[in-house]
Image (cartoon, rainbow, N blue to C red):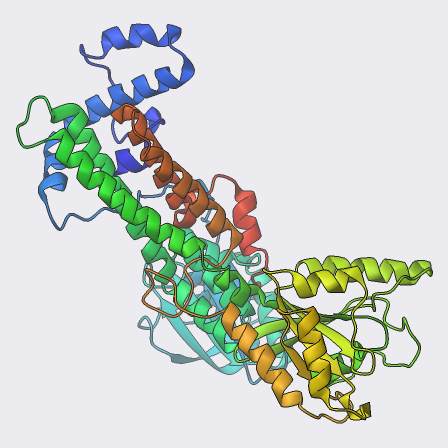
Length: 548
C-alpha cells in the first residue's frame, strides 16, 4: 500500500500486480475519453486506488491502526548494466609506500585466483599475505602483497570485491594494471563507478553519495564534518521522516474517502483536523531548514569575501597579508590590479575564498574598465565585503562602494588602512565615517606595519561564524540538512504543494494529489529511481576519482 501511495498515483503500470478493472470501474472507464485531462487522471487514480484497496484492505487497516508502523521507500529496479567486473587503482598516482587496487563484480574472486595462483579464496574481510604473479607469463609482480576479499552483499559496492595492497613502486603499479587490462576478466572503472554501484545496490542513497563526493573534496574541518554527517545519513533521515509523515497523512485521507460512510471509527472532521495539524507542523520544519541563510551551501562551497576599494588604498597588500604569501602585485601605480585574484583561506574550519579586485575609479583604459567590470560582478556574489579606504583620505566617493556601505542586507567590514601615516588621532576619522555610514563598523589598521591586524582577523572570523552558525532544526548534529541547491529547490517545491493542500474548499482527492506531489519531491532527494535523467546523476559523480 505504501509503494502505491508513494509511486503509483498516476502511473498505473507500476502497480505490484496486473491492473484489471472490476464491475465497479467499468462505467467510469467509458467516461475517460470525454473528461478533461486533469479529471481523467484523477478518475484513473481513484479507480486504481479502489482496486488496490480491495486487494490490500487488510494491510491498509494494519497501517492505520498500528502506532509503530514503518513506511519504507520503494524498492528500486535500475535498468543499468552492472554485469561487468571493474577495477581501479584507488590510492592515486602520487608517491606513496602502499598502492591499493580494487576489483568489484562477479569475476573479482576469479581474478584474485589467477593473480595469486591459489585454488581457493581466503576468508572474507581478513587480510592475507599473497604473492602476485602475471598469469600469462608466471613472472612475479609483488611477492609481499596483502589481499582482502569481500563477499556480496557485505562490501562497499554490494558485489564480490577484492582489494589488493601492494608496494607502490611505479613498476609494480604499471605491471599490475597491465595484467588486469590483459586478463579479460575486468575493465577499468570510470570515475565514481564503484560508488554508483553502491547506490544501485541500495548501500547508499543519492544524498549520501553527494556527502561522499563532498568528503573527497573537503579542505577544512567544518566541510569534513558536514560531509561525514551527510554520508552517514543525517540529511537522508530527516528527508525520509518528512516523506513518511506525508505518506501516513495520505493513507488517512484515503481512508476518509473510502470508508467514512461505512465505518463509524473513520470520522472525516477529526481525521482531517489531525492531518492538517501534522502538515502545518511539517511546513514549519521545512521552512526552518530553508531559512538557514544557505549555511550548508556556504560551508560546502566556502564564504565568498571580496576586498574592494578605490585605487592605491592597500587592497593588494591586505590580500598578501591575509594569505601570508605574495599573490597580488603591489606598486604605487594606480590601476595595477586589473584582474580578480582569488585564494582560499581556512578561517576556523570554514573555507573563505578571498578575492582581490581592481580599484574602483572612472577609468578610460579599456583593460582597466574590463577589470572594474569583473570586480563588480565578483562583488555581487560576495557573502562578505571588505571595503578598504586610505586613512589620509577616508571619504568614499565611488557609487558602487557607497552602495555596499549602505545596503542593509550586506555584511561589510570597513578597513581604514595606513594609520601609521596619520599625525592625528584615528578616533576622529572613525567618528566621521560612522556619521556618514551608520551601519559601518570601521577597523583602523596598518597593513604595512601590522598594527591592529588582530582586530581585522577577529572581525573576519566573527562574520564567518555568523554566516555558518547554528545547527539546523530537525538535525541531531551541528551540520546543515540542506547542502546543495538541488535540495533547496526540491524542498521549495514540496513546501509549495503542502501549502496548496492547506487551501480550503477543494475536494479531498484533489488535496491528496497535492500531498502525493510533495512526496515525490522529497523522494527525488534520496531515491535514485526518482532522479529521472542520468544527466543529474552524472553531475553528482563527475568529480569522483577513478577508484571511488
